[in-house]
Amino acid sequence: MTTVKTAAKALIMSGYGINSEMETAVALMRAGMASDTVHINDLIAGEKSLSDYRLMVFPGGFSYGDDMGAGNACANRIRNNLWSDVKEFLAGDNLVLGICNGFQILANLGLVPAFDEDRSREIALMPNRKGVLECRFVTLKPAAENLWTRGISHLYCPVSHGEGNFFCTEETLARIERENMVAFRYCRDDLSPAGGEYPYNPNGALADIAGITSADGKVLGMMPHPERAMEFVNLYDWPTRKERLKREGKPLPTESMNMRFFRNIVAYFGE
Image (cartoon, rainbow, N blue to C red):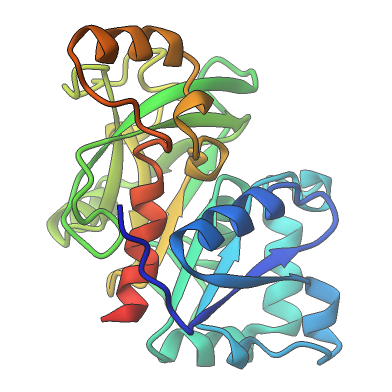
């Protein structure tokens, strides 16, 4: 696949307990986008400026140990110190991505499903239904055609979280569905709906929701980690897939289908 390069640059947020900066940077680099990993304190101190970037990524991890609830302490630090910068960033032709703990941060900030000046939260990521940390591969199916999902039939990537159980009111769910803000849903291996069934839906998420966008589509929060399975051999069942492809006389891929997700981001800035 041809790699499109862009002059746009990404800011990957770093801070205490965040641990997926490197994987995120490599995924973007392979897709054709340079990035800087920036500690939140450097933004607050003015040593780095959000205005120098076009993509802001909140990667996975356990920011501030999740001691005040998953993603809540980091969200409060952003709200209390960087809120005007974030609002200005969102007003431009820029994108925001939150993965796992990053999704929890976006939810606590009220940036998904819709940015609201009163900073209200319309959704929550509750403790997993089984009450344990889930680390497993899941299959995701796009639920809407947008800049993030373009050309993707499915993603196959790991989850690693204890609080990914998506929840909202019936009224909010109806609006999210009506305005096509659901980006990805958990599904079965054959891409049929998970129907809330474990382990296809690993956390009990309402309506099998694995990721949603803001109303304008520029902000995406998702629980699974596409950046942690960039290679074909990252897929836990790659030996079986390899033998099947060999018997069918098909070439072996070098990268996983998840890289299409990051190439879509780069393509947006190249348009």
